[in-house]
Figure 1 (cartoon, rainbow, N blue to C red):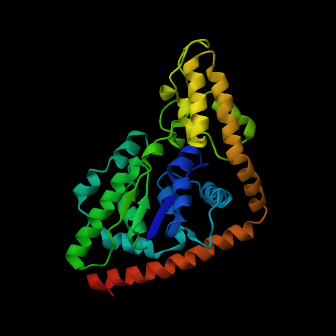
Figure 2 (cartoon, helix red, strand yellow):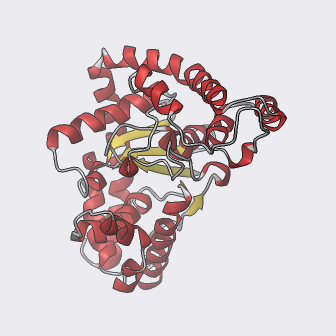
Figure 3 (cartoon, helix red, strand yellow):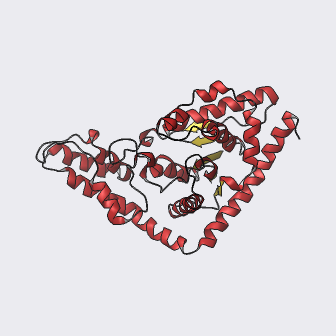
Length: 320
């Protein structure tokens, strides 16, 4: 089983990235042949500062390696180091109906948030399809909001295979339903676009301050509280073992337990998880040559697979 995941280097990675994409991807490297890429071509739709893009790409690499990515088991690379994917994007564009792209909600959502309505933004799902199909991926772990793009990929692959022959594996999405949406400090979905994130490896003092600013209701300290409607508890249970979750939930329901205490418990759980990883990241950052070597080696392995798929697609379409 080949598993494919990608993440944009469009800013500092946060808890939404970790629980929605990173942790599932790291777990899946135990279950099959994993391909993981840093989607810097995709990031060009929103990041127009070259220095910032390079820095963010390096940060993503450091974050994943610190969080446990094993480059021996995972093909880890920069999207831009595999030029075959852009040629395949054009070949797939030939069979992609306009109506299919016009129905994609991601484009509409981003334009509504003020992102320039470029061709790249509109055709984003075709590049994503090329990312997936060029490695003959069987499984694509995605958040619920990205499921439509995998469905588009399936539609494109089926149409291409029907028209030109069986070139592509038709992938399946893998969605972690219980963590598909991670709340931000304002209660909305955690997103860099909303400025409501808790960074994985940000300044520790600022991280604690942001956790203490998580929006809660006005229930008095002495009154019982419903953990299932609290954003603090929603984040805490992502870290905690079942027994720890239940113990904190009982404190909520018993009363005499304030949201400030819950936030402190959340911060302690956060630091217990990411403190050791932060120290690992600091060590990796001292050896940029190692990180670059991992990405270059991953790109060489990815290109070996990509070339075979691209050659088959070119031959099927008569442009070999």
